[in-house]
Structure formats: C-alpha cells, structure tokens
Image (spheres, rainbow, N blue to C red):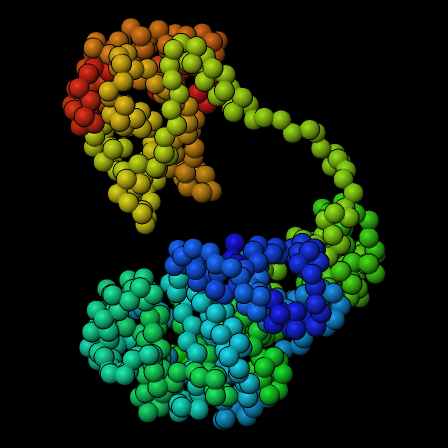
Length: 587
C-alpha cells in the first residue's frame, strides 16, 4: 500500500481545520485511509542513514505518513488527500474540472511519428496555465510524479511522465523514435550535451536512474520529444531535458505522458492535472493538447469527462446489509466525491444515477459504489447479521482429505516438508530424465532467478532437493509432502489446472523398495480404494523396479526405486525409493 508523507501543519491548513492526533486518526479511519506513522524530517533522514536517534526539536515540522489504497491515485499527494477529506466532512463540494475553450488553430499539437510504435507507441498531453508554485507546492508536484511512477506506471515501464516549462519551448511538438546516436541534448541537472547512447552508459552509475535503463537500452531506437526548434524535451522514460526544466518561477506547465498502455496514460495525466489545476489562474481549468498520428487520426487530451453509472439501490445497500432509502444514500455518495441523484428512468425500480469524476478511476462497477457507501455510512455502524439464504461455511473436502492423508503418512514415520511450487526447468525435466514437449509445464515469462523458471509438474524434484540439503541426517531419511502441481489445460479458462499430490521419499543404505510398497498399501487401504499395480517404464525410476498405481481404470500414481543417474544429478549418494499419488483421484 502506498504511503504519502505530508507536513501536518500544511495538511491541516489545506483542510481548514486543526485536529489532535487521535482526532485525525479517527477521521482517517472513517474515510478508509490510515495514519501509519508520525515523525519529523530529521528523523526520516536519520533513519535512512542509520544514525542514532537524537532529542526531538520542538520546532521541527511534524510529518504524517498516511497509508492509502493502491488504486486511489488521487490520494497520492497532499492536494488530493486534503480535497477528499474536505469533501468528506462537508467543507467543500466535488470540483468540476473544465477544458479550456480555445480555438482549434491555437491549440498545441504533438505529431507522432510511426517509428514510435517500435518502442512506446502512445503519448498524451495537457497544459496547466498560470500555475502559482511555491516550494511546498513544487515539492508536492514532483513527489506525485514519483509516486505515480512507482505505482500505476510500474516503474515507468507502462507510463513515463514528463513536465516542462512551456514558456521555454515552441510548439508544435514532435514525438519520434530515433537511433540513439542521432539524439543529442543536455539532460536535466547536467551542463554538457550527451548523445543518447553515451547517456545510457553515464547513468549506469546513477543510483536512481540506472533501474530504468533496461526499458529502452536494448532497443534499436529510443523515444524522444522535440519542439519545433528541435529542442529535446525529454528522452522517455529516462530523463527530461535541462532546457525546459520546471522551476518555482514556472507559470505554464506542459505535461506529457508516453506509454505502452493508453488507458493508464490517461489515468496518470488526469491525476496530474486534476490535482494541480487548483493552483491555476483559472481554478480547475486545463488546456487541451491535440495528438496527431501519422495515419491522420487525432485525439484531444485530457479527457475530463464525467462517467455516468445507473445503479439499482438494492445493488448498493444489499451487500452492505443495511436498509437505506435513496435520500440517505445520495448524501453518502456525495461525501465520497461521487455526485448522485435519483434516476428519472427508474420507473418502479429504485435506481441512483452516479456521476464519477475523472479523479476516481477506481470506480469501475456497482460494487465499487457500494464500497464507497459503506465507508461513508461507517463500517462500525453496520449491524452484525448472519447472511440470509446461506449455509455455514465448511472446509473443502480436498483440504480435509489432504490433512487426513498427512496424518496417516506421519503415523508411518515420515516427516512432512514444505517446498516451493516453482523450480528450474532443468530440475523439473532434465535432472529427472524427463522430456519436455512444451505441452505440459507452465513457464514463468520473467523469472527473478533461474531457480524459479517453471511451475512444478511433479513433487519429485522438490523432495530430492530437500534430501540433498539434509543428506547428513541419520539414515533412514523418510520425508513426504502433500502439495499442488500445475499443468497446462486448454479446457480451463486460465489455461492451466492445479492437482493435489502426495509424494514420499525413503533414503537408506538400501533402496527400501518394500518400505514404499508398504506405504502405498497403507494409503490406499486408508482411502478404501482398491487398486492394481502395473509395470511401468518411467525414466526417473530404475527399470523393472517400478509400478503404476491403477484405480477405477486410470493411473493415479507411480512408485519405484529412483534411477541412479537421477540421484547423481541431485548429489545424493545413497539409494532411494519414491512414490507420488494423485490424491484428488481418490476422492
């Protein structure tokens, strides 16, 4: 959950009221956010540098750290939190955001070159005119960009925000994608000019920017934005140009967002302009920018239109479990920045027409509206009741059966282990002498390490790895696991299916094949499942020392002596026997 650090006194000034810490914590709880910590600027710095605590200076500014919901991008800055709380306590009405009415020939334009489709195909833009910055507002403006970059922008991979002093630039603008050797400019906080390829090398030692280089560094072309004089505005998503850097004296701000996801780019742009248009000369008014693509299509941004949703009253109050009329629900929605009124088209049905402002991108469904009503009504005010027409919940039969299997195997002298559901491709296939045809295993597209490349299709490699790391224990070593494996399944809507398995491993100076056979008999008798053993030829087992377990005409497992080559690959010197059973097949 994102945490926003805000000066207490500035926040109270923006809200228009002063609270004790207990009163403010209560207000946050009522609104659905949390006062996570109370500290000071110096204390934060000392903590970051791992310095010892000092006596607090009574003149230090108190910092409130407020935890907000991850999808409430409008609450990632002081301006958003203060506005939301003022509306919640009835001190302010939800603002109406407007697009400046300017002649089409006076509108700023961004021309998009076709090559951008190779790297970051989308760009959206807007202008804030007559902004009155001071140091606190400027810092909040920069901090919001940083919060968005780490949240919805997914560390700039989906969206990158650029903000510029418009008075230093000359439109129209051009969004292009060029080879790095053809891009040259003076980056932000630098005094000399760099070619883009040299700049990437330079920033590899920069603690903040080096983590974004991978987004474009291997691309043959880099995205770049120029004005009409070929002045570089930015090299997204890495760095802005120094020429158009924003200062406290900036009055007109150009905001551009380049993206691989147009929907998220619109949300980010709307968040930036709705939060800081309150400081414009014309409050809550934003100047549009036209984006023109190479195929002649064009769009005007930002889209600050209000979304209309018609919701049944029963869909709002039913899941909450309270009895409220429209006249009571409408004020609750207004407290949450959702303008509401009784629907004229309701007829005999009780419906509410809800207007969702551009700040509330989290409102997607009637359930989201229901949640806001519940917050405004107060969760503590909802009477506890048992849900109607519902039976008391119970444990899933598979989980109950799994626990009984665990208990039975434990009584047989085996120790349970818990292992990762992810493993390397080599461990899941090659080290078990199994072939992979691409039709069975779920592959992780961007694994953090080589140890987590696939979702396991068997528990065997997991138990063998556990044995390897505990090979010095006294013999015999008897371990087992009850857990899920995952295999590809085209009949499922997610393309894969979980399967609950039991696996047990016996290691001693002899193979202990009879031990595993005895465990199989014990499990099958416990499950009251008459079964048949049939010879098998699985590559992970020793030839003619293995069997398949057949139940109700289908194979539900295998057991046998583990092949010496498999043991060698896992670094296990002693012989082992192993069994794996599909316990879902026994239900």
